[in-house]
Image (cartoon, rainbow, N blue to C red; front, side, top):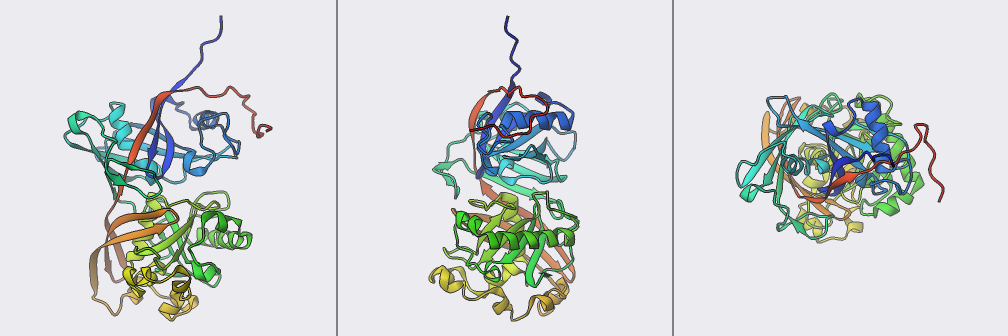
Length: 414
């Protein structure tokens, strides 16, 4: 008689511009080390192709969500995000994922962890990785999750039902604070940078300061070895400044190169995550970059304030790249780095509160965000952060992990 195969219930869902495997926490081992070993086999890692698992051979499609009912009175669901490395035997819980978050609400309803409450069901979520909260508003006409709709999301073919994702208490999610150094602009080895964490630790850099336009394709940027080495050098410096320590083996902070908008948005972005370049931009990364754009004097705000999107859109990327934020600000990085939040806004009102809509352009389109920011001297506070997203159920079934020896660590031969 053959042995009974041990399978695990799973939903495979597209969340935003990512794809991942969604599990109930109770269907996985409680011990984190044992759980991670199992997930490596489920996803097919370490192997560049992930040929023996359900991973998609790319960081954007090698993601896992582990979900359970929450005992937190402020949340319905606890959501743990795990990034399964494609070609290394490593599972990381260092950061959340806003794209996969979009699928958490639908999953909770599909698995009966939350009951529908009307035409739209708000699902309150505690992001276990950081302790921050989010609310995903899921369309549930007739008490059933609706996936079909007319909302287009850049980077995703076709349209789907609209999901509104609101973030709460995301400032300083991984780093110690929204602005970990207390400054809006810092000097990284002679390069001006805004170090920020409003849901994801991000280093915002002027593309022109690194010798590129900021409109290159992800493939071209990844092929530029000198650029990649420079970006990584700055990332290691920023990691210490942001209170993250030695980040050589971690996935945060991400590195965002910004340039003037080319297609009518607020600014253009290219995101290193941290060694590959994102085909679009992650949700929480977009929120952090949008927050930087809403802060007077930041690297991102320099482009947004310098010229209106309509004016910039009429010019070619090559032309608008000729003027860097350093030129717009007319100050050197070393000088800017000495300026506090209060210095940056000293010529404005003592207390400035505003809601900013930021359209972030990325390699495959754009991402729309809404950020509420209050600047009061040295005190910067972020209120509501929200994005529009979509999600879709791709598969509801059972996954059967490969039964490799516990010592497995080599990549299978071709």
